[in-house]
Image 1 (cartoon, helix red, strand yellow):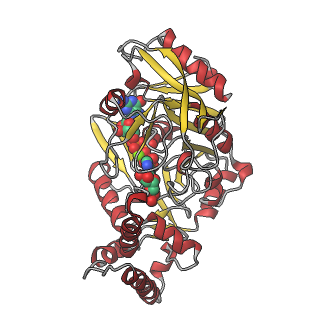
Image 2 (cartoon, helix red, strand yellow):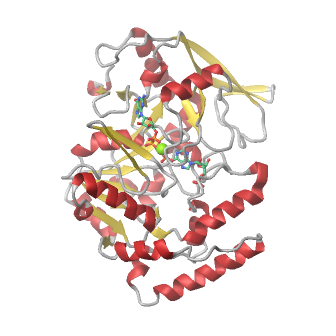
Image 3 (cartoon, helix red, strand yellow):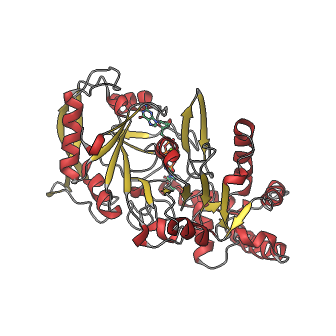
Length: 420
Ligand code: GDP
Ligand code: IMO
Ligand code: MG
């Protein structure tokens, strides 16, 4: 099994690359996160944004799995399936859903909004899809899972958790609007006809038959619940370890770990971002890169590439190959910068991430590079771009195996034997 995941704060272009690679795999499996993800795929002049479905779903010969580590909003899942069906015919025969994936209830979304309101100026900037509250219930051993929907006591279980949420919400001064769960129950009925499976058996069978599996990460390593910029993180393990617990597959089964990163950095929501550019350059990156959230439409904060953070992510995930995205967005910049170390509290310099990025002041120390012209990057690469890539490879100690220079499938160059 190979794992593909984001090395920054999400939105690195995972959807594009998973779709691009998926024709070489038998199974694409999401292992964590939920509809907070927004994975954009463009081909044949069409654009799709996937929140719940794995990004291999558009290839007719590829199976897709929503693993046990994922949290599932039935209404969003249903909408996404129906939209995909309109263009591609019935996609459900190739979709498998773990019975052990937890369900996001309408009240989880209300709780998400209530917690954010309570946090005031310290809010996380959550996508408000109920992610924190549903994982909270999972860990508290209160959650409802996909497999429960076919059981006779599903409604009783639902009511118990609803009342629990009602009390929490009342404590924070909120009421649950009437009929909040009508669509939810319609979608639950819809789900009963899907392939709800013991996905840990399915994926291990694929693995033992030497079928090719690609695990598709959501969010990015710097949003990992353990290693991200806590508390400004999501509520799951976005790093490669999450692929094992989120699919029920052993670490021994992992072959390649593909780490994808943008040639610069973005972040959406609150939290520390050492290389953020709150100036014209940042605006230019946002405009050229179309840096607006695929899930919430919010402006993404933009800045230069942060190499200490990238190296940290490479270390945590055991990245074997790097894929560099959005090189075209930097085309035409006369000078480009990348942060190589941090000056912390004006006292010392380090290339390691401090314990709590929120409580120290960080001045990024930059190396400046010559830019490359605003030209098509499909042919021979400009030397200045090669230099930039080479510097990154030497800094983090892993080769770049693929370069992306546009949102479409064909705007992608694979480096033979990882050579530029
Ligand atoms: P994901 O969450 O990692 O799948 O990424 P998103 O889909 O949220 O954001 C990536 C955005 O960049 C999408 O709008 C993609 O269509 C777009 N994109 C992906 N790769 C490239 C690229 O190489 N160049 C440009 N200009 N856009 C890209
Ligand atoms: P993809 O898979 C970028 C961010 C939110 C917020 C924090 C917590 O498209 O890369 P949550 O809703 O999980 O409670 O939000 O994490 N966030 C993302 N940022 N891309 C994503 O997913 C994200 N999913 C969550 O903006 O700061
Ligand atoms: Mg995204």
